[in-house]
Length: 368
View 1 (cartoon, rainbow, N blue to C red):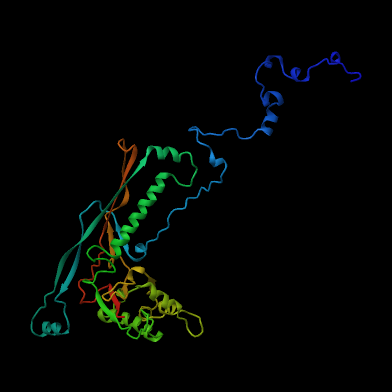
View 2 (cartoon, rainbow, N blue to C red):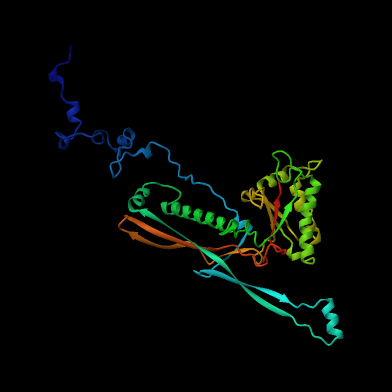
């Protein structure tokens, strides 16, 4: 090494680059290169969380949207509910019975025979059974702490409450349609006039209106309005505006089109029917399918339910709508226990007294 001898080296580049007060200790990257270089060279150094669990969320994409079960109820579309009143055992209501109304014959007697007719108004008390819904859930302390580590759209309390609301909705759905002891909107055979639909022309595996022509279906539909108008002496306010049908009937009405393919039979019936014509277009008819009617009826071949959707004719009561009642710590289970309570009555149809007289709600059962 010509021109280079150990005595010519005047400075130790490694040792002299470190300040004297740092010599003899462990040297970090920050001490050597400064904080700016440290940020550029070193990434996330936190490998564990406070509980020494690996932070896998830093290595995976977390979707904050929760995928909860989907459910749907239809009772609130078909039945009006009357809310409030507090905890009760029964819901009471009264119906008025008029008797002795003057007719042509009695008017003649009263005018010529010095006889004054008497009229009376009697009150009949009715009671509807009330069902109490009770449910509780335990939210464990440790689960609550764990959920604090995740950033989601909903808290664990909301997740539990959604389950309870779903259970309540399905409970009311059952009471409203099926009832207890067959006293629901679909099962009140002792209170509703039942008419049989002659669909004997149905062949093979067909059912419902399969064996009937469009003209026959339109005639049957208008026959329902004719029955109401005759039975009520042309009282437009009592005409049915709701027709709940089996789902296979809903399909049949929707897939039949006119020769010009401009309208389905279902759309035609909604717009063009005797009820709408007699009410000068004021009656708005609704036809909707319900799976619960597919096997309903005396023959279990399907049932159509027709009625006027109005609280004075068809309703349920919720004296105590489902709500959170109380939350208390439960040391035995190491959890918070929350209680939810609600009350709902069986369906009330004040103008349906028996199955021999025409009421607001009527049933039409398929024969085949």
